[in-house]
Amino acid sequence: MLRQTSFASLSSASLVLLCAGLASLAACGDDDPVNGGGGQGNGPSTGGQGGEGGSDTPWPIAPALRNPVDTPDAELAYEALLLMGVNQIGSESTTCSKCHAITSGLLETWKAQTDTAVATCFADPTLPTKEAAEAVIQCARQKASPTSSFYTPKLGIYSAAAKLDWFNFVFSNALDEGGVAEYAEFVNAVDMPKATTHWTQAEFDIVAEWFARGLPFLKDLLPDDPGPGDCVQNITPAVGDHIEAMKTAGWRAENAANDLLMFGCAGAATTLDCLSTYPSASDTTFGTGWEYMPDAKLRVLKTVNYSTSYWTRSSADGRFVGHGGSAGGGSSTIVDLLDDSSIDINAAYDPGFFPDNTGWIFQGAPGGAGICQQSLLVSSPASVSFNEPACTTTDAVGLYQHVGAAPNGGDYWTVDGYFVSDNGGHEATLENPDAYFGGNTVAALTPLIYNGTDYVTKSTEYKSTPYEGDIVMSPSSKLLMGRVSGPSDNQDGFRLRRVDATPNGSGYDVEIPEIGRYCINGGKPGISFDERWAVLHSYVTGEDAVELGFTGPSDPGFTAYANQGAANIYLVDLLTGIVRRVTHMQPGQYALFPHFRSDGWVYFIVRNMDNHEYIVASDAALTLETTP
Image 1 (cartoon, rainbow, N blue to C red):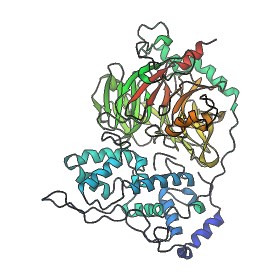
Image 2 (cartoon, rainbow, N blue to C red):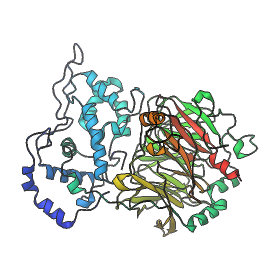
Image 3 (cartoon, rainbow, N blue to C red):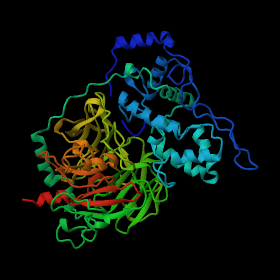
């Protein structure tokens, strides 16, 4: 549901007793809405008569944001979880559970977001004035800037009401002529769930009431899952076999054989000499310098004068860089580094580029995921609506997708599944994303073929990935790597899987055996085109204090990090498990969303929480390759 994302099943006997006793449990509630009784709750309720919108035009009456529900606590909890798609209690819905493993920890996180939204954005849902409606719109943005993207976590569970009457009223009346376009952008960015079926007002009222009461009976229906145990690093011989095969059969080798022209490499004697015309991040323009790894360089490719949203990804040749957010307050952008131009993209977030440099994908386009030929970008359009002949859309590919392609003319692939949102650095971010993944998590692998006009999906294979989510795919589509859940929904390393896909006519038979485990924590990784390396960002916590040069987390020098946060880029050798830090970001500086281009350069974004961001390139992996 929200852009974040298991739980132990109730025993059959417990479920029968709970369901049988719902009527008698009504007595557990009381009439005190503040203390979570069976009354109206303490959240927003109905709209009402507003003030004047102007001297001559009366301000209209707002519809209800939510309506009170008087269902007893236990029954209310059960009905809300059914609506959210918790199949352990018999739900057949896939509303929230299509993207998220609905755990008690995740719901408590959503509740904290919802409580903040109720206290700020929805403090007076009657909307007595136009100014009150305008304030709601600004409150839903990621930052204070009027061009900042709309941001789902700012709304909590109320993101599921984006298409209902109250929000329609807000935009229609607050923005006058521009309300229709702005409302469409708002819905595209925050509306949850990302599915064809949405809750009615009455269904939303049930869920909102449960959150307003403080999620009573949550632990009874969703007891904590013990998880898979502590991480133990394990790199099997299959990893080395795969890396050896990719030296000649992977996308780095194939793109080089096909003479793929890499951005910024014209006239360069070696790959390490590419991008030499761009300023070094050690320049004092960028503070005290961000470089950390000996002999490795960081090049600043572009200053981005707007707030980006969610991850950044680039084309195989490094020319095009995509992310959510835009200079004009629109949905998303693809930057063309060749001519320093920006292309407005009518989609929300989650860009991906195919490893053969022929196509790209963005989530939140009209109709689902938008997929286009890369030739469209080369033609330098001002914008992409996904109505172009070079584009198609599909609802077969879920959020937080990652893409690959089988070399030598094989099918394209996407993987999606359970995820936890990670869009840090816009404010102080002091820990890595939680890992709300339980024993029932799955990954969806969808093959696509390009028929000369469109990208057409074949049947999706759903594979069990217990306690694992945020899964990415290697460029060859032959590896998967996911974040693993540990105690208290904290991350406990990464798991590496091999993808064995056998054609069966209409699709594939797929197996995904585990071949490696790596005990480092951080955000979603990117895998190199030769499939030797993984790169990821990790937020600075107290556990990093000694590595950063302090005596410990209580060292006074670490205080700025403890208050402002930071994130660094790390490079993982999949063959040996050795981890190396690439950057040395200062407090309040966030290096995020690293990924490889075909020749081994790494791209990532740097945020300084001041609406200035930077697209940065690193030669860290290439430097290690040439080091004796």
